[in-house]
Length: 341
Ligand SMILES: Cc1ncc(COP(=O)(O)O)c(C=O)c1O
Image 1 (cartoon, rainbow, N blue to C red):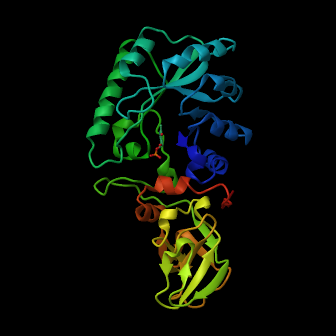
Image 2: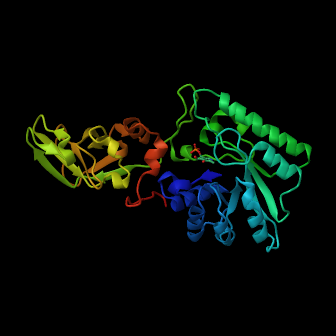
């Protein structure tokens, strides 16, 4: 079950979903109802699981778009059942059990009570049972093992009462790679589909290749004399005569403002440093040491050029975040172009 929430981690949910389906992925996961509806409106027909919370006023749209809800709170069940009872066949749902993430989900005894006591209305079909790991990419295995123990205990109780659930799933990318016991019948990878991971150095990581390149071009070149300043609040003061390239991309496009005076880009295969504050729509870089730079030259913000590469993990390190955040921050104004689409 490929996780394509947050616009497929910034890559573009519709095209990524189509590509994954072409490669044999049979089921998608999003977080919000709107994300699921957008995929349906694009003509995507595979099962789509909505991982996030469901509100009573969303039930009509959920059914109209044949989206599979994850039930994290028993309070929604009566309203779902009322709608499902009007259909000829039971409506598929997944149930989420909270085992240590401290987020959405039923407590284990609540889930056992619901299922073992047969309190789930028959118009709802329990297609899936899931949990979510908090620390699959952590240094230690302890918390994941603990969560797995709790989850497995629920599964064993259900099996003892002859309750069969077709789809059992727990593992995100890190979980799927690091904990074979957590693979069950489905895994829910997100970040690794896009070529990144946040596993610790002690864990064996698969050989991944980043999917996305973020690039722009040089819009203008100017020479700033010694003492001249660049961008808002004059945080960059030229100590030498500086050749500055102006790039038409800014924090509104997801090029984080914390990259001000810190980030690096590739121009003609060479590193150029961000100078001054990143603006909403523009960023300036120092190309003094790169001869022959011209307006229109490609500039790589994430990706490789020549022998060098800048990854979302690099940007994350420069800004104190994780590659997830870098990728899914790439704004709607940035055109997505797909090879082999
Ligand atoms: C419930 C759930 N499953 C799976 C994933 C995918 O996680 P990852 O991108 O780490 O593979 C996420 C993402 O946060 C999630 O919230």
